[in-house]
Image 1: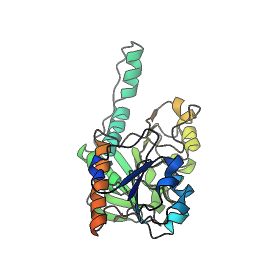
Image 2: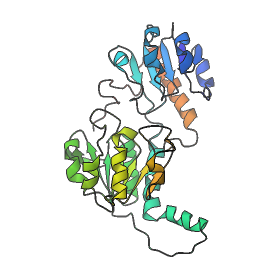
Image 3: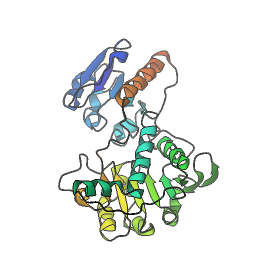
Image 4: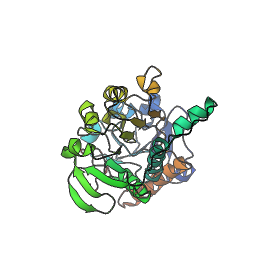
Length: 318
């Protein structure tokens, strides 16, 4: 039997799964009522902390699959210390997120937000735009999202480099990968800094006041990783003080972003509601991936995207 943790808007189309297992659907409010006897849990509402709250009811649980790439909101000490396998939805979002990053870079370079503003004001004001060919992008995070982004930016003739756990050269997607400890030294190299890392103890608050002061005044930040990797108050100060030229944020420390947040009104800042990976058909792809993994689990085959619960992500070479 499989439990499904839905959000308040309900469940996705689970017809591909219904023939494989008995399904019990619940929101966070009544998850405890459907967990007894469940061996698998499909976490559709990946923002929910309900599993931690009802963990004593999950004694039969053996596998948790989440409909997200990041697992920072899912993991808690009881789950991490258990023998319950956790898998994520890596492989669904990468290309769409890479396209979002490229779109943000183009929006900055071609001043598309300025064009929209001028059009709304019925003002005809000619100006030059920037080229992106030859510009430098430092991508923090060398997992699948970072790699898809590196390939797309390189195809646009941008110069890319990565920042990962260890330094190396000759990487097929990044060329040069710098170690995390070298962050402050390499930030000044970049015209665009792309945060694509998962949220871990090492990445939480990585981009802070010191980091922004290490960037070029003309540089822009694009965050498609997790909100808490950026110290938002420090980012606001950096934008106000002209320490960096702009930022595009798709993720935030608090979501939805409160209407009172200073981020909404910052010049040079693009705000989007955690949608960079949600391209057409994404829900169907998520269900399809879960169904594939469910078949593997039922037949004893290796599961896709097994998360290292200590690391907080699916390990790669980066």
